[in-house]
Length: 290
Image (tube, rainbow, N blue to C red; front, top):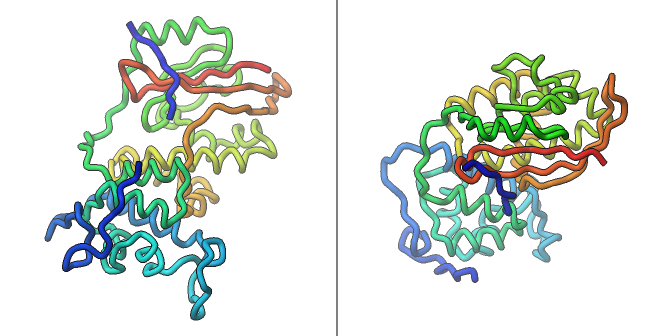
C-alpha cells in the first residue's frame, strides 16, 4: 500500500583546542583524500553564516578595523572552542569530519536557527550517497492524485514534477512545459508565465524556494543531475547567482499563496506537502482553495 505522511521536519561539550593539530576530539582528517563536494558546501555554508554575523549582535568588541563583513574566523573558532587552523580547514572544504559535539558548538557560535543547525549536521554526516536517478511514481499514487478535486502534484528529490492532476494543470500548465524543464524551481525562476502568475510576490516566493532547495541540493552536491539544473538556473535567471551565494537554508513548510491567473483570475490557496511512506524521495503537494 502506498501512502503519504506529513514530514515534520542535549548538546555535547567539545574538547577545546584538542589535539596537537588543534582538531577537537572526535574529528579526523584524511591525508591526501580527494575533496568531497559535500565538504565544499559545508565550507560555503559556514562562511556565509560567519559573514552574516556582526560583533555588535553578539556583544563582541569591535576591535581593529575589519576589511570584510562579519566575524573573523578566529572569533568563530574561539566561540566554538576549536583552533583557528582547524576551523579554516572546515571553511576550505578540506576532508575533515567534525564530531556531533563540534557541530553543535559551531551552531551556537554562528547563532544558527533550528533549520540551519539541522543542515549543518546533515552536511557533516558520513551518510553514503548514491548517484541521483529519477524516481518512479507508483500507479496507486497516480490514481490517488488524479482523484483529488483540488490541485495536486508529485515531485522527486530534485523537485522534478513527476505527476499531476487536471486541477493542477489548469493552474500551473505543467502539460505545456517540455519534460526536461518540468521542475518546480526551474519553472519558478525562468518561466515568464510563472513570474506573472505570482505577480508582486514572485521575488519573495522565489527566494524562499531557493533556500528550501539549497537544503536538498547540498546533500547531492557534485551529482551531475543537480549540477546540470544549477547551470541552467544560473544561465537563465539573473537573480539566481546572488540568492545562491547567500547560502540561505529553510525548511519546507505549509503556507498560503495568492496567484493572478490570466484565465481563472485571482486565486488563493493553502498548500502543504506530504512525503511518501515507501519512497521518501516522492512528495505530494496539495493546494486547497481558501
